[in-house]
Length: 285
View 1 (cartoon, rainbow, N blue to C red):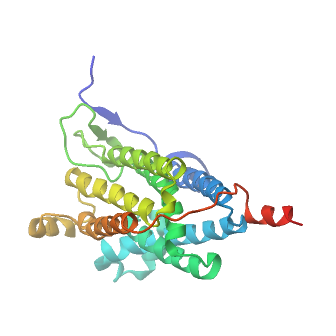
View 2: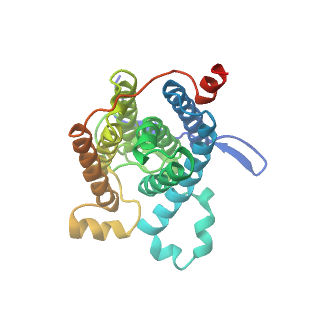
View 3: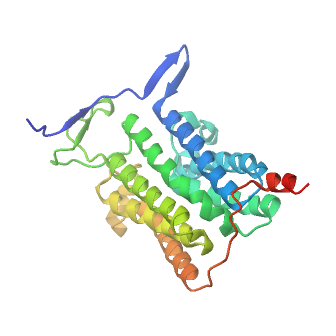
């Protein structure tokens, strides 16, 4: 028998001890950062970059992701509310993170990381960082699924989800799964580009594919996603697109510009010593 829909009543909490609770969303974030750290570590070792850069970059990225995502939600989606309740901005545990803000925050962090740590171009870090970021984005969307949030409108498709915990009685588009699948596929493509095609030898190419892949997917899926805040209803009626789509357009354009730039400039010739820089220095003594 084929089901007409899926009843979704998963608990967002894995287990709790008193007031403390481990949530699937937080676990997805943690797993993503751990796996991402190891992927970047292999890249740094592959190219002979200093191992000490890893911890510094992780700190920059974690701080930038949290602050950028939070401020993105505050300013892009609910400034009318938070401008009247500034103390609520700090209550991240209550929810409210925007991926567009996270991207902006990470760009600033990578720029600072390039100036103060690597002394390399911003593209060198971004081209490597976006590879695991695609995977992390997919895991975060699965965390949204466990929270029964950020889903789509009513559907009669057989994989529609009834999000019981959010009070729904009709099957909805599981847009969290749609986005997660897109990001996981993109992650596979970026890994293939880096490890099999040495695409990092064309500065900004991997980054450009990342931005096009993430934000074209986001733009299209937004058409079946429910609005996140009330003011988006007015925006859709006026412009035909919502805030998520509007914010995606500059990143799509930027991705196209990056790809064009990468393909119209000479390919670099990189060495691959497959050892961290400190190890190479020690071997020469």
